[in-house]
Image 1 (cartoon, rainbow, N blue to C red):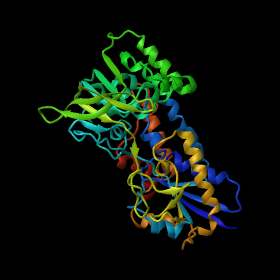
Image 2 (cartoon, rainbow, N blue to C red):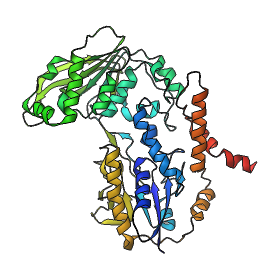
Image 3 (cartoon, one colour):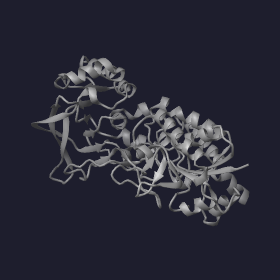
Image 4 (tube, rainbow, N blue to C red):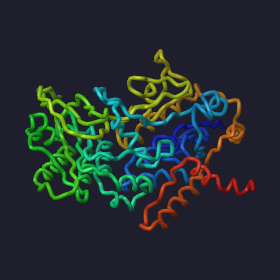
Length: 459
């Protein structure tokens, strides 16, 4: 019987869902899947891109774990595509490859002063507070007043972590060094800015509602932002999500403000113009133009310029994919060019055996449900493209292991992830304040714990 040997690069939700869908699909051939992940642990942005105080979203990990724990997918962690293995290696060992590497860089915000000291990308900040092993472990939280530009869920995560009292994060898996830095933060005001009005935000209602539940934090909204145009009123009447968002914001308008030690301000109709430098060359202000609805679903400038004094700024205007060695890449959109997951070359011709799914395929939009349907579309092509599969020189699953070992790659496997997972949970249970887990952050420690059984055997 024909066997499809498939490599998937990226062990976040997109890659794991793709593997699961293929294994459950009706087909006339066998399937062997190897999942390659550059980090020592799986789950991608669910582990390293979601704020630690989101237990419901973290619950997605349970479903992903169930897929991996069936044992019909091999996982090779701590293996970097383009460094430890390349496209030629995959062609020698597999019939096809799916890239599910996501989008982890910050999209640009093209305004003067965006590169000043004190101006940061939201993705970098999220990686820091989530304990990503490849980012510095310190963060300069020394500002009293902070700006966050963006009106999506990432902007809310960043704003919430900045405004929330560190002690309220203790029951979560927040790394110890992150807690220490947040505990000493002098922040009093976090200002969130969006170009359009409240009816056009990209927040999910649940995320927005959670924001208003922060202890000792006043939610500040401004009456001038609620003079709705006809398009906004229609959106509120016809879209349930917009209706709930409007309801939440208007509940905040009715609250008394002034008793809390911290404030989170929402500014709508604010077009970024400049990050203003102070005498020391660091961020000192955020300048924006007040906008208004243009009657066609967008906004137009009013000519009114305002400045808010701040000492730090975070741009949360979207994520952006990274190019992969030997794979076509769209520099403008930050994705792998493709047709329904079939990768396209510079002449818009399908590249045999190469596929994409998740954010590297469609851009950083959509929630987990979109990721599943997106993977199904890609998988359908993988299963029906048998005539264009590669013909690998090796069909022995042990050969890729030998290749990694010959190159000195300290890869981690599923058993190793179980060891690391159990170790982190035990650290959480032993903490002075019991926690879900305490993440191990340094990459070398993650690898050492994951490969502990191998080390003992070698001794």
